[in-house]
Length: 343
Ligand SMILES: [Fe+2]
Image (cartoon, rainbow, N blue to C red; front, side, top):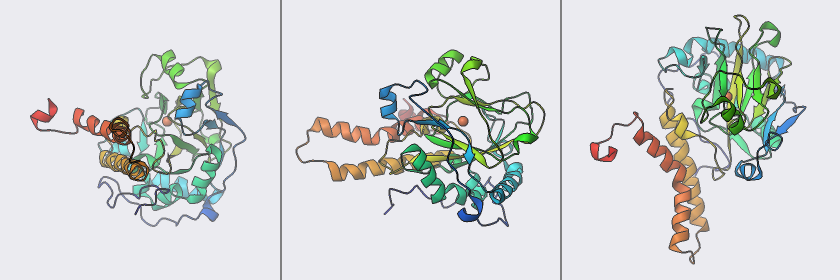
């Protein structure tokens, strides 16, 4: 039986487009982590989110200053692995253009070291203490271990204004900050709704235009191996274009709120449209995992006096995210259904 406090294991097979690295060092928390606390934390309240939105969020934690995550040895190993995976980045394997210029999803399929880092209980415990909720490596491998590289065309932003499809993620700088210029990571000092409204966009996808400069905050990284945590689906953020061509690598590990019955901000409906190999089956596993946990809880909770109306509501609530994901598959081009099911 799955321990509901843990995340899902990776699928037994990796997508064939992803090339596994060989001869990697073995990850050791003692050797490769050097976890410190952030100097400052900005809450959702600080950004102007209202009480009901905060109550619906797993935590009032918004975003923090960059804190040390990797030891010097950890940085050396991780940066080398990021460089070794560059030639197998997603943009080169027919996954299609998207908001990101040059990136890897599912780095944990290619690198055991990266996977073990993202799975590290020491890291999860540290992040859980910052947010006040239990976090674990994200159950969708595509987003559990991501890497962003600077785009080849430096006139383009590294990443445009957007929110993320997951509740919590780290942005960890792997390059030396004094070896590139521009590429600043910035977030909007306000709610995502206000930021989106100012830019005239809906949903979470990005646009490369400017918000009022007095409301744009820049996160500074003292050195490589520092990163910050954000409630990514609430923080409106971007990474600016580089001033000149240079290496700028960030690692983006994402996390899921546990136990598996907890409210889940994973936006599987949005991610179902991504072109990355394996992403749709990964999302199906994730939604099946969370739905089965909610159903298991119902088995324990349902009382013999409950009315049909109450029971219907509880069953609907348990199944809603799974149903929404299924509906997205039906409505998207990813599913060629018999004609009567498309009607
Ligand atoms: Fe992001």
